[in-house]
Amino acid sequence: MSKSKFIPISEPSMDHTELEYVTDCMKSGWVSSLGKYIPEFEEKFAHFSDCKYGVSVFNGTVSLHLALVALGIGSGDEVIVPTLTFVATANSVLYTRATPVFVDSETETWNMDPKDIERKITSKTKAIIAVHLYGHPANMGEIMKLAKKHKLFVIEDAAEAHGAKYKNNKVGSMGDVGCFSFYGNKIITTGEGGIIVSNNKKLSEKMRFLKDHAMSKTIKYFHPSLGYNYRMTNIQAALGVAQMKKIDKFIKRKREIALIYSEHLKNVPGLELQPQAKWAHAVYWMYSILIKPECGVTRDELATLIKKRGIDSRPFFIPNNKMPYFSKNVQKQKFPVAEMLSVQGMNLPSSVLLSNEDVIFIAKNIKDILNK
Ligand SMILES: *Cc1c(COP(=O)(O)O)cnc(C)c1O
Image (cartoon, rainbow, N blue to C red):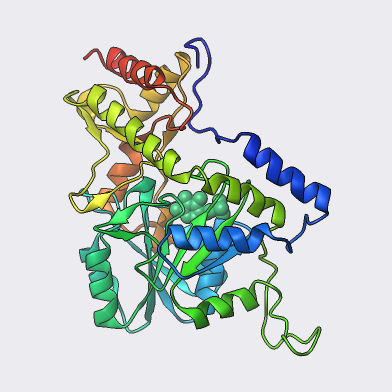
């Protein structure tokens, strides 16, 4: 990538393998939601995530919705979610008519704070959605302890953390189910796509049934439950099978990029770099920094200045409780750590296609602008 070119925040990496498999779908006519790539992709991804079963779906958002429905969550139930996440996490709870209950983040991991989870548990709480934000695993040891103690389901939203590990455990394999997204900017992509991995056979079968209109296996066009059409297509799965050949390489490169950023941005007064807990194997979906007040420029000012030099960036998510479709009381809840992260946090370009020189160029420009 030349320095006169714009460096995007993210770019998918695809080659002749994707082209070959997708072409195979076209030539064979298997373009809809039957075809050989679907079970192959499900098996490969479940195995990659140390799980027995994988249920592919159309995108990451519906993977969360389907998991909640299959776990029996609905009206009158409460589901604990971090406020600092992509909005799909909280929305999936609203789709079931249950109530998302927001918790603050912790500074050690930027993920949901287990102490705040404990404070928010009530007699109506049914589940926790643990999000592994920006590629860093949530504190699953503490979260699973709380879930056991209070008999709660745990859904891992691992949309940003394929292959990340808490201690020796792959994300997605610790809770009741693990939900992933394969949107174009995720660690691997199927265009749009998602999967739910699990070690629970009955639950996986239920999700497979629900995602296919909940059609009876014995009586055609009899639907014993309210189902959905959340099926992944063979074309998406073909992309997925091709991407699975490279997923380990992508993660290795993401971690290398993070290391280069960290080396070149360390000890810059006012910059705080993405943490990695000592028990964590983070995959740095998007390498992230905090622009502290000592920098003398705000996060948004820095974003504008680097954009002028051809470097893209992204602000952190906005705490979900602030969205106008929540009640005024929910909007007014205070989450000091999440709010600080949301205002100061910036994702830097993290495509596996970046060269080392690109990463160094980005770091140098940030230092130059900050005059450090
Ligand atoms: C991307 C993402 C989703 C939703 O995935 P889609 O495939 O875009 O529907 C859910 N949760 C988090 C944390 C995400 O980053």
